Image 1 (cartoon, rainbow, N blue to C red):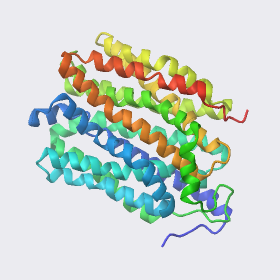
Image 2 (spheres, rainbow, N blue to C red):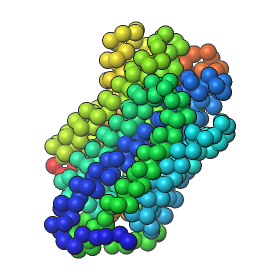
Image 3 (tube, rainbow, N blue to C red):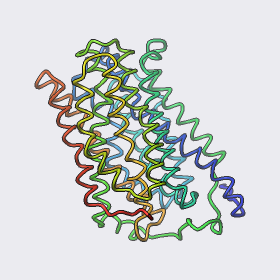
Image 4 (tube, rainbow, N blue to C red):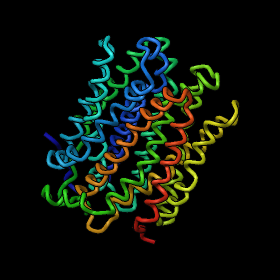
Length: 403
């Protein structure tokens, strides 16, 4: 039984617990998405995987999210946030079985299945934010959620290799799933639905037809196309930079993982600053245009600069640009005319579908071109060029800010 707050005052106090639950959910999703990245060289030592198969193992979850986000966002809108999130948590938690499997096929299968959990959790977050957050808090809540997503990814890159050397890489993958089961327990104990009479953001029930109409709107697809290139670049670099720095630049495994973690952890100050700019300026498009102009150039620097402080500086700048625009672009769906929690969740699902499709293809493409040419540069350059989908889409999107 889901308990409900009885008044607006209760909602006002309890929304911060909801915000904390959402932040934890994003952190655990980030942890599981990039869990294999830092330990990929250790996995390759045991199974001698090809470049494309290595990329597939890291990006398997994103492939599932690509195909499952839209249908599961519709199902989630019918189930309600509590059930959708609980199901998502449990599915994501299946990663604990990674410790018991000694077959690449089974481990890869678990990665694909975990993607269904993320496909429930991430799109439905938009609906929960719109139901609980005050209008002037939406950008800030999105900022916190994105910050915790980057924290989860960064933690996996920092502690993955050292922890794997102590307990084995299978235990590391299992631990990522264990945190999801903790999330399921906390969610079941603490989540409450907002009262129908509490606040103005709780929408009346909508039909599936009302949700499907979102996918006929060109703004939905410009928003989705905007993240295609940046996400492809982010996942490709997150997947391959540790191995690239290890095998090409001669860094130690732990140092290579640490350097790549800077790339991810840069997202924390970036999303905070991006959220601040989004909230204070009242504008969305300028930060999208700025980021879209320089993101690919920064990515190119991260792979050509010499060793030492230059690598750390380049990956920080690249990681910073990878995230600074996201509070703005994930606030736009909630500000479009006639937006509702269910419709914004559907737009999020479309963005996840397009972004994760490119995220799945990008690391596989880099691995394939590396095997074909003997160099990482062709694949890296391809994703750097692709990052300009953000700049193109920013010109096409309307300004939804209030000022």
